Length: 536
Ligand SMILES: Nc1ncnc2c1ncn2[C@@H]1O[C@H](COP(=O)(O)OP(=O)(O)OP(=O)(O)O)[C@@H](O)[C@H]1O
Ligand SMILES: O=P(O)(O)OC[C@H]1O[C@](O)(CO)[C@@H](O)[C@@H]1O
Ligand SMILES: [Mg+2]
Image (cartoon, rainbow, N blue to C red):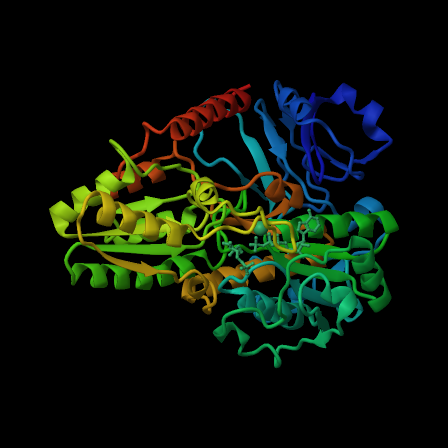
């Protein structure tokens, strides 16, 4: 029989007879026939992929009496598991979950079975392998912290996003109301706040109204991540649960903290809650605040449309956030129907000549008398850089500072129509970039934030660590942090969503542009490669 091996950072399927050579390093823990890595052993991506072939798993009886799954699966099942405190503190005692006595949960089938997993791939073919799975998020029968022992902290890092305050509020209320935790500290001003600022005490009362405000109640920052100083501080303050809200950079920082905690053998659970307005975090369905931002973007697009419709040859340009991925621009365009053209970082465009943007603008002006262009801030950066001869500047976290593509495009279009086409146009440039992320979250994002916060709390109380929470195919899961930091989510030009947008706007695909062709070809090749791997 063969089994699946899985770790915080990697998963493998190996023949069982290959386990003994590894077994000194690994602790078999699961009832699922999985062997869980107790170390951070690294395997090359290639070895993971090749080893996925030919795996069969015989699920075994659950140790805690949950449903016995004895059926033999002759397909490829992989669990991308998250670390647990007992991986490096094997003698840690566990306790019955206090939710057992909770009035709120009294009639609910409360606990998530250790066998519950969430499939990463939901659209499958009859004979395709079962593929990658994550542990389902939610309360566990046993917890590894006594309520009175918990000293939790919350920190927010990176850019703003609608809903951060809701997540803070719900972590505090979740810990307090569900688990009876009284000591919760707010770390102020991002990672550097661990070692440069005093903490504030957070109680359900002090955070009661914060979800009605935009921004972050705890303030945020970029840069300043010093793993050793942060973990020294965690140790000095006696903190044993760390909740870290932030984007890809923040999650990398959370992974570093969790590794250092493990190296020092501390009983500290580290939970990441993914945040980014750009929706560029891999694996999860969508990041919180994204819907709110798209909704707010409608107001700017609507204003642009009203303005340009009311004048002759009106050209409206709306610049939205999206550093490396154009999800906000794409979704705002699809939602609005007033947009004639959407430009995103993933799809290069060109201005002059046949099939170029100038030709399209002129055509729409002739047909409709106006045009609205939505632009993601990361689009066309290479052209802007050429025009401005700008130095490559970075923010405190090392992210490249973007040049203003909105101003650049505005000027280019004005110059072209005034000087080349001798046509008078009415240009309206709207830049609501910060406005769409500085607002409070809408109703559905508020619910989403609540689920994220509560999942994080349940996971930490159950002793999981070094994990990120998030919905995978609508089911909340515990995801190894590396899974969400190794790649960035971008708009796939080969996906049907981008095709839907092109079909809705009828804008040029700019396919005669060599760079676009190159990117589309690469995406097709990547997909063929992926398909081969998943069908091994
Ligand atoms: N590789 C890394 N290792 C450790 N810490 C990191 C790493 N990358 C970034 N950080 C830290 O994470 C914090 C936030 O990073 P960053 O400014 O890139 O924002 P982010 O979390 O990616 O959010 P967003 O991009 O959505 O604004 C900063 O304090 C930064 O120092
Ligand atoms: O100006 P700030 O606060 O550094 O943030 C700007 C960046 O943050 C993001 O909103 C991501 O959080 C990007 O879309 C944007 O480029
Ligand atoms: Mg980032």
